[in-house]
Every structure is written in structure tokens, then in C-alpha cells.
Amino acid sequence: MSGTNATADYLPPSGFFIGLILFICLCIIVGIIGNVGVIAYNIFMNHSKTPTTYFVVNLAISDVIVCLTFFPPWLAKYISILADVESNFKLICEIGTTSSLTSVALSLANLLAITADRCMFITKPLRYPKIMTWKKTHILLLVIWICAILNAIFVYFNIEEIPELTLSCRIKNAQQQL
Image (cartoon, rainbow, N blue to C red):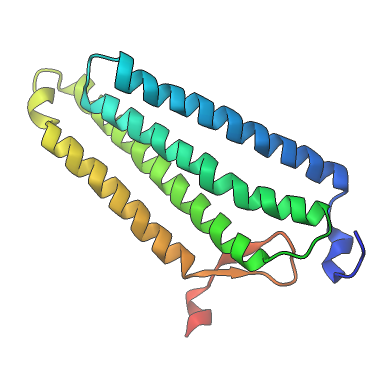
């Protein structure tokens, strides 16, 4: 590091960033291959199409989105820090934080839907087909995605970089906006 930035003195050693970059690349590769495998299996090989199948495929799709949107901005940031190249950290902060919070919310909503679906299946096995209809399944999936998109819009317009900390950004405080 050239030492031109006052915060550069507080950065971890370059070996840390190399390890982090390799770990992120591994997460991207394993995440994409594993989730594409889940999607392919449930679409082409699984012949028992149930609401749970749709929720599992939706969870796998959201995890692929995590791999494609959450990891690359941080990977770019760590590579630019390692190479000591100035980059637009504000943009990386906005994209990385928005995609991470949105993807986590999307994954959690999918896990909640799977849990509720399985709970109804176990506690009300005879009434389950009448409770969990295809129409309700599709509506629930649509609501999950609409909530995730609204979350992304809210987060994106409320992100700020913390100037004194190179690797940090946060959601703006409501009182700071007034």
C-alpha cells in the first residue's frame, strides 16, 4: 500500500485479502454449481411437483442471486485494495450492501415459506391440499419477490459510506436525513 490514504495504516495485511479473495471465489463457484444443480433436479428430474418444490427452487434462485450480486462487489473492492488502485467505493458500498441485505431478506422469506409449508403439512396432513393450493403458492412467491424488491429500493436509497473506515458502510440514520 502506498500510504496515501490515512486509513491504509489500519488495513489488514495483503495475505488476508488474498485469502479473502480466494474464499469469495470458492463461495461463488460452489454456490452457483450447487444451486443450479438443485434447480435442474427439481425442474427436470423431480416428478412430484408440490408447493414445497416451488419454494425450494425459489430459495435456490435467491441463493444464485446472492452468488452473482453479493460477492462480486466485495471481490472488486478487495482486489482494488490489494492492488492499491483507487475505485468508486461508494458505488461498491451501495451495490454490495443493497444486494446483501436484499438477498438475505429474500432467502429468509423463502426459508420462512418452506417452514410454514412443512408445518402445515405435518400438523394438518388431511387438510393440507385444501390449505396450500397452487394459487396460494404462486401468490406467496409473488409477495416474497415484491417484498425483496421493495427492500432493495429502500436499502439502496438509504446507504452511506463511512468515510473514516475504508471497509465500512451503513444504512443512514433517520435523524441524519432530517
